[in-house]
Image (cartoon, helix red, strand yellow):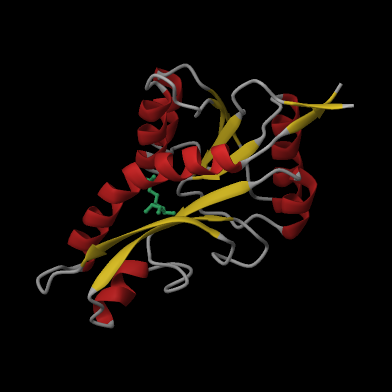
Amino acid sequence: MEKLIGRNLNISIFISGRGSNLLSLIKHSKIKNSKIKINLIISNNKFSKGLEFAKKNKIKYHIIDYSKKKQAENKILGYLRKNEIDLICLAGFMKILSSDFIKKFKNPILNIHPSLLPKYKGLNTHRRAIENKDKFSGATVHLVTPKLDSGKIILQKKIKISKIDTEKTLAKKVLKIEHKLYPAAIEKFLKSLVFKEKV
Ligand code: GRF
């Protein structure tokens, strides 16, 4: 028999650096009625500033040595299982998850990307938008699949690029909208999920 999971789903955030999206998600998780419950933080970088937010907010974290990818991913899968993680949210995680990892985890994985996908997959999104004289940029939250930055789009927010914008000013503007977009996208996604457990 199966019954719907009545609890808030357990979320793990993966980071590599600054962690400003992680911080905005932590803040959001503290809002009354928020469905976001961060149980575990994974970082491939022991110097990630985001780890300070984990410590300050007493959220469990693990630093993963990525020198051997397969071993690193197996270690992460062990932690995810142990902490009963239902959803992974990548927030500036600079490693590409293998298709084997995605298959073995079984549950959904979300990512936030600083462009209006499907435009500008990969790196240097702001530089490319400025060089192409685009009128708009933005950010996208999407499902992670083995194909880089190509999974189903959950939510997207558009902003205007002004004539005087540089790569740096545009990055700042986009990051600001990311901090609202990611929590909203996760809440939207969680609402759409029907998780069942065996009883
Ligand atoms: C963000 O721009 C995000 O879209 C991209 O990496 C950056 C991470 O920033 N995937 P932060 O570490 O959350 O500050």
